[in-house]
Image (cartoon, rainbow, N blue to C red):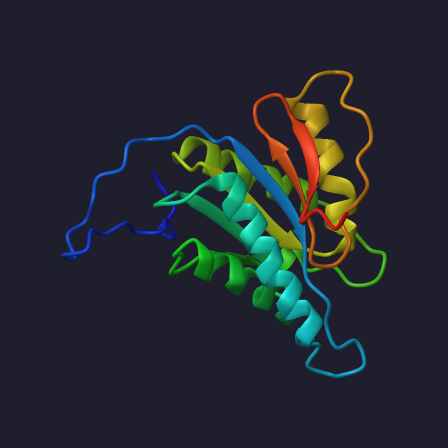
Length: 185
């Protein structure tokens, strides 16, 4: 059974278009963008909003133009949701998964967090999505890419630095070729 948060695809006249099942080919583990650490609300700063726009432009460059099936999973922290909204807007998602269990604080990665992300990955893979995007916190973006590549890639996967705020690890699947987006060279 497909999750109810598939982004719906419509033609210009409002009629639903049929979309053939695609193979999952891109996985992104994104770190939320810069936020107001000294405010109770902890919303994105202007830099965070700029970085979020740059990140989604980089994702669009890899995922491609036109209608794409994108599965988005976000932490429930405001900074992650605000970063995810930029992603959702870019890919026409009217709804996406928000998961409190991937909201980490401090240096604590709760037991079961990575397994939960694995479950969502399997839903995306079996659901005909082309891209799987997770928007979370340092603890997740530091741990999950290596776990994913170990489970799905070649044995000689090598290290990959964790993304900074407003960046993502892009993993081409299968094969698990990795790079950091956006490139800030």
